Image (cartoon, rainbow, N blue to C red; front, side, top):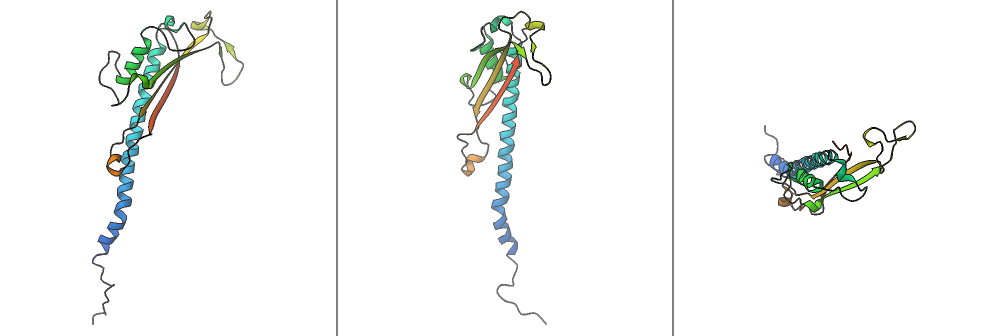
Length: 174
């Protein structure tokens, strides 16, 4: 004997209804993961670029760092910016579509003492001995606006989201 069927006991459309309820959440999670991965990847590229620029600038001649403020002298600023932008000194294609030289800043400061984590503060020795201003330190930083990968299709423009990286290195004058 067959049981009595009511209009609400038919489950043939249940899977489709459940999928319609869950699909927006699944798409949001998937697209959000892709966008977050893209942001982290672009941030990694910028951090590496700024680190390479600081290392390059720190290995230039001490003559380019006679002042303890402003930018270094000579061709160091232009070459460092080219290295951060393109990963090449001679230029090439930019790592980011909208990066410009004004997005990359270089600043020099000097210190006459070294403060270790533990113990007393020490005066400069080695290659910095006799330097009137102390050890020059180069600070390279860059800020690039983030361009979303798939967010524009879903109403996320990315306007106002910037990727920022900063690196500091003691000038070695090698």
